[in-house]
Length: 351
Ligand code: SF4
Image (cartoon, rainbow, N blue to C red):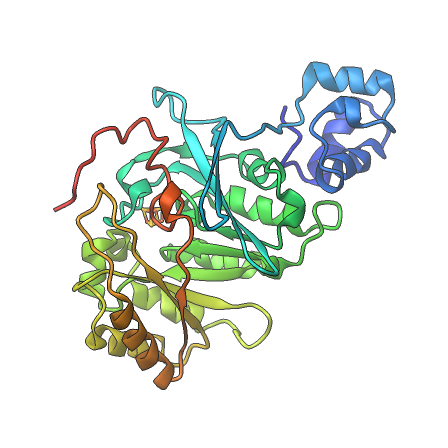
């Protein structure tokens, strides 16, 4: 049994089954989540007898990254082995990206090996789907990087669609925010989604994290061309759901909008975006696209992005052009899995 990722209640049940003292579960939480130790030997206030039994029947569940790359801008990409993948898929790797800034340290974590959403501009999407990550796999990315104590924010925007692995994401958020866990504020985490509406409703009802919707085009028919999930979960339904919630408190909703040259970057698209989000207090992050051998899309130029941003701002939407980070190590948005995937040896350019 892997203890990382277990809730206090689950650890209490585990300890009761093993006839350990009741307080052992609380001690395990303190060692694993507060003190972030990676071995039973380090748990010095637990008796030697219990530690010996724990070594026989359980693992802490921590494992160090197997590789890392540093960008000239300070961004770092870490590669981990995934513990659980589809039969026959072979060893799969997942990536987490640490993005330092003046007063913040953000970690972009992965939640799946590959992705089944199939967005045409995304390297992960071209990789196919090879399995969900466990709660332990997701938390391990947060706890096993050297910068773990510098983290101020977690964004679930790495490989995979978080709401396609909802139960693991919900439990990860529970561990992150519980007093027996990492005791983080819920507003230090942002979960991104293409808009799987039933799961988004659960996320909104069951957690307090920020939400980021991957929009990329406000015209439904054009969005369906680049994001196949638009056909199953139209963006209009996602917006209608979001409007049922209060966005005037600390919780935030943002829309991610990657800008592709000649595809979604003119003022007609900006006007449609304004129309679509009318009545919703939100912000829009305009993301510079990073060309890759796996896609035929090209980035919009800086001037076009600024014109688009200014239009949104003139129409009452807070819009930001997201600074480009980690492009040189394939760590930027939409590029994860490009260098370590064993399924991407032969680049294929979508038509
Ligand atoms: Fe999956 Fe996100 Fe890539 Fe779309 S953009 S294929 S949801 S990882």
